[in-house]
Length: 511
Image 1 (cartoon, helix red, strand yellow):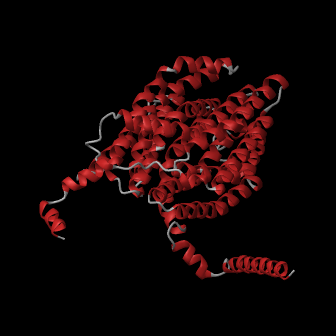
Image 2 (cartoon, rainbow, N blue to C red):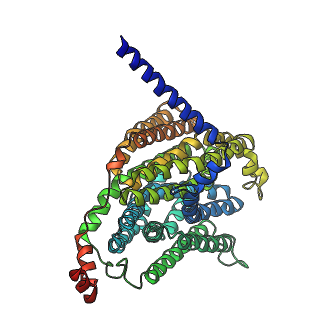
Image 3 (tube, helix red, strand yellow):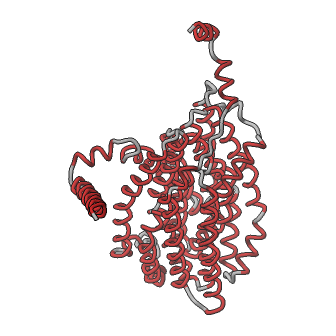
């Protein structure tokens, strides 16, 4: 009896201690000292923001390019704006697979850097560049098939013509777009974010200037409309590629990262990147295809629904760029800490990122619900009367975006953490489990039951919540802690021994 009583008292004491611990933590939230420590600690607020801020600019560069394209095209022809969006989304859907493989270079570089295997960085970056050079030209060759696909979805002849023209000229930049992601990983994986930011800013400014010149022309020349918008974007993407390439070669003049020596196709390293990157890219591929299928299906619902969806997604992508930047920072920090054998710091980086993202998303959610017309007025500037039929549908669709914004932010952050740890296999399986039934339901609803734009947006919201939940559960269960991309690097150890000065060898032997 006494043993039972002692056990009960011990359990009660443990519960009381846990309660006091949680109470102390809650009270600490109102202390300035707590937040100073939270901000300054390793993988705390300062470190995440320091990494994320330049990447926000860089990763947002293409989104800002597309935003500029569509705003200018709205002033030129609202059908051209819708066509550029539909064509661009199909482009992103098809490019997501090779793009995701090239982007996974960041996880490799981060872990190699964290494990101090620097000479493996250059070769893996070049394999990502080769992914772009291999897959990129296929997008130009696919132009006739893309035209047939748009026509098969019942788009009007004018829309099909606009969509195909935009696809062709935008596809000319595909090799640079994919390869640039690998080049950017050389900097971001080593926490050198400034270069990526500068390259992104230059490409954005160049694109905006070229957009206006090539869409509307100068003194009657080069007024190429939708073709001009795509050409401007392709030129800007290639400019970013060459800036990153030149800077990478300059940074590695001493050969520390084996950039020049590693500039060759390495079958083994390429296969390893492809294996892990293909699994990881399943998430971005699934999401992009989900978006693409919905957009193509919404095109069946009419031009007003298509234009409203294009505007809503355009605003969603632009506003969401800070979360994408935080996601890249999470991949880098998690990769660095897992490579260094410090999974607890990797978990802290993820939690810190969630804490930073939540207030920002909260503000956006309120703004999209309360004042959607503030954002829509940018599109109505030149042709307010023509835009008016689109306005109400666009405002309603923006409210769907507001509903899933927080879930989408958690989706990005948790998936980025798993990617940084190398847990690519789960990312692939979870995405397929969610993606397939949602897309099937969308097709059945539209073609069998005549459902419209709001049916598609409801399913989009369900997709985001489902994927975010799966990634969150995986993260908190902790299986990713045992994943790693780092292998024993005996070659680097041998090279270090060879590079050791003879005098140092003699001293070591004498000791």
